Image 1 (cartoon, rainbow, N blue to C red):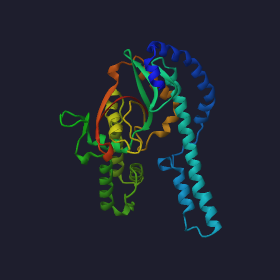
Image 2: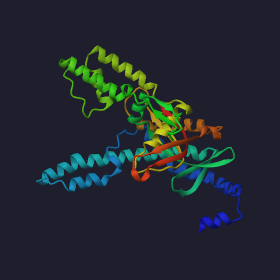
Image 3: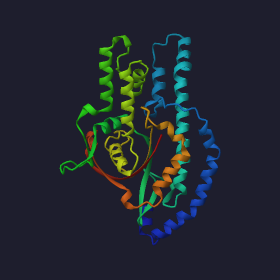
Image 4: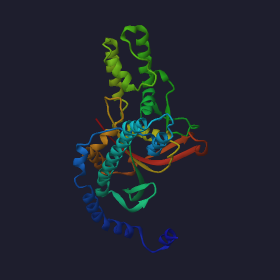
Length: 333
């Protein structure tokens, strides 16, 4: 009803924008007061991983209360104090780090003249951006670059030129260049050729763990392989808008079913160039990320925004062809 009244009213868009603009300074003052001193807290923050899948604290609590193997009060308290509570503490620390850095970085958007802030919460919209006399809504997404993306990027992601394929990009099917498979293949061959190294089987080990084992093995060919694969990995980290486009597409096409959404997104990607670990810890570099945001928004034009086309088939109820607008920047070290 309110939306209908607003649509049918005589209030113009310029008048709405003028009203929102009149509130910007007040919003900035309130946010700055809220965040006063918090960048210093983040600067000395003990970085920890989330330690909890899908943010479900209740899952580990349920596992604890349903654990019938705890037969004594001593076992019960030991499991609680030594296992459950440390994980919850780790999750709370990560959540604080994540939310606080979010709030600090969002202030850069609030201060930029190209951004039209929202005066109240709007589902799937964090702000609007003024682009070539248009006002485009965006949902802000902070995300590290997934290992799965690097595996496909190492195979080769190319612009699609086939009319029967809706996606903007296609993946080279040559799995021999896949980063993870190359690492596992080398590791497996080394185990077989030099049993005296006494390396463990690679099952369940991450890329970083496998490469650390190879680096510390004392085997010269293994050390050379680690150097080679690390140098190649740097090339898979996008540096500019053209290279970020397939990463934006990948994040739409392979998004999880549970949180599937086809909204316009402004991505801030985080990545290490020479480490085989995700870049989520870099989120605390708020000033450097703020510079990237200003560079992205300064002089923005419509051509800078990608119209991402992707076919989604990870969930039967969601199968279909989709299109959304996307914009991104990346902070890497």
